[in-house]
Length: 200
Image (cartoon, rainbow, N blue to C red; front, side, top):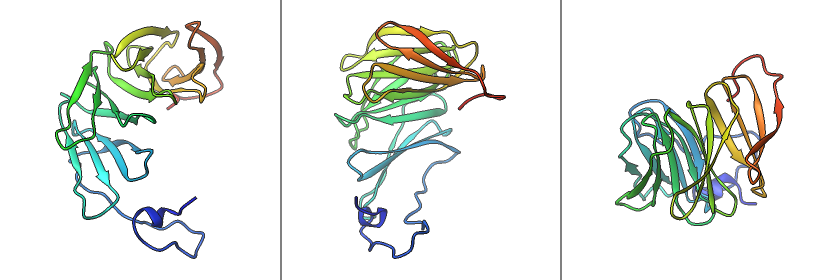
């Protein structure tokens, strides 16, 4: 596997210690989430400034700012298959963006509370969202069709992810639990409740 320096056009470091390769500046408020584009040529970040930024590793390529959310953006994910970016916001929506100069997005009116988690299945066919409304929802793509809601958390959902095979999902939240879900059966199959505080 290539070193991080390889992606930024530099030479591999001879030391084992991490080094700062590059710093990206452009958000006007705190950064809430950051993910790699699977092609390893871009980073995507979200912020309390209501925006997403797409950062190119090559310094000569400019960053793109995506606007459209009406409130803070708390989470971002990149589809592993089709280049779509998902973002979740305090405005209770999920937006699906095409990472182009225009920054066009489709809107899913997803939840009745802040959306704090977005995650694609490995095959890119499903999107998982988690919210302050205490639910996790599954959406089919393309088409943004609602599939099911997974209910059982007693407080805000902070994170949600698909398992690698897409059959299971895991979520965590302010109720101090981690829940394991059978996505097809729409039910919680195990709850881990050993945490003393909220689980992010």
